[in-house]
Image (cartoon, rainbow, N blue to C red; front, side, top):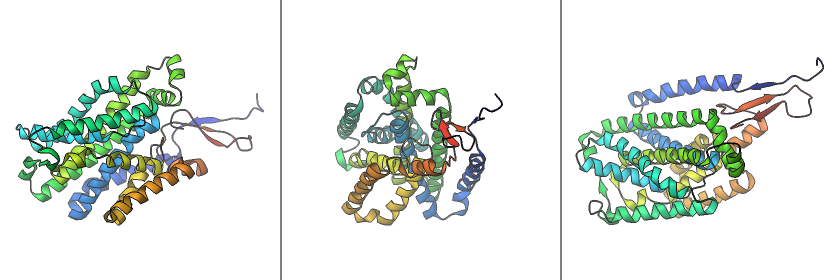
Length: 346
């Protein structure tokens, strides 16, 4: 009909194309930073990359797949522990780090068959119990010396400058690969599947979604990402202390960054990690008051800005820099917003 309103379904917009170009430029600048920046800048950016990885992994797990875990520190710690063991048994330092993260992902596969039988609060508590159990098991290893911990001595073969640069490039590459993997998964039919599972698991299964396989994929990916963050932290600190590496504060940080940035959005965790990084640098030395402040911030966001900062920006202004879903563009005056998200990731 000639009088019928026209509409368009789109994914990339002018703003998202421009943001894609801006991301490419930023990546190039970040890649050369160790060649032109100070040691302090390189070290701090390495820490920021680790935070982005952690926030994005928890967001993939909870924000998109609906698996709310308070035990991701299990993989953060066990990846570092595996790396220590490999280095002690003769593996080169940096291959040991990568292999440690891979080992944690492999361990996550059999773990998933038990943990993914749990739902909601049971899954959350089950993951916390798993983290504590792994912590206690690692403490029994004579090499670790209980809570005293040990060091990854093989890293001392590198000069401080070499280690700084290598850690930086490894962290940058890890962050980009993991973000790219999440981005591509969310833009595929798999992305629609895991969000359908998050919204209604039984309904998703009824239309043919392989629920357990999809959840297991996200679970193992998140485990690998958290383990990779753990081995990167080990590379920067050199020391391994079970109480620190298996500390629940890591998952608390992940939750805070995802909530503040925007749970269930691609850009939100990145924004949340940047804000957390700034707060950590400005107020991190205030000890218990700093942690209490973070808790209050998380509660306030959960109550008054449940969509997070980026979620609010998307909702109010329709800005989507790196879209993972589709957008329905309606003609003006149609009675609904002329720019509405549809499909996975809206």
